Amino acid sequence: MTNYSDYITVDPHICHGQPCFKNTRIMVYLILEMLEAGETPTEIIQNAYPQLTKEHIQTALHYAAEVIKTGEYIPFAAEAR
Image 1 (tube, one colour):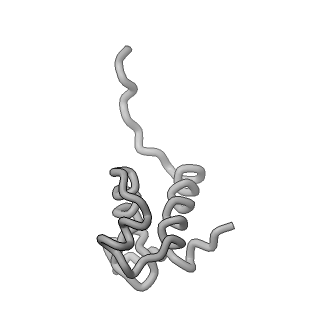
Image 2 (image 1 turned 30 degrees about the vertical axis):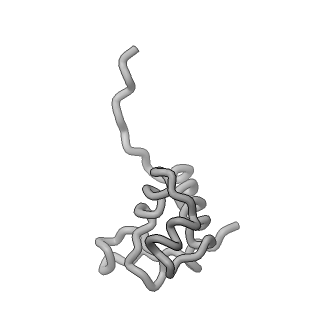
């Protein structure tokens, strides 16, 4: 099991309480958006956030999956058929 606190922190005084990578102000959702846009972990590290490792990015994915599994969902309208 991933120990999220090794990589991710939530502090109401940093980045409005958004989950961030420990000792940075890089919000987890930014990395998830970059992955969704098609960037690879290597590209993210080399081109945008060299202070992160592949372990940071893998932990972000695990964290997102855990939030979906245990958290609240954002409702949206179903598409008309």
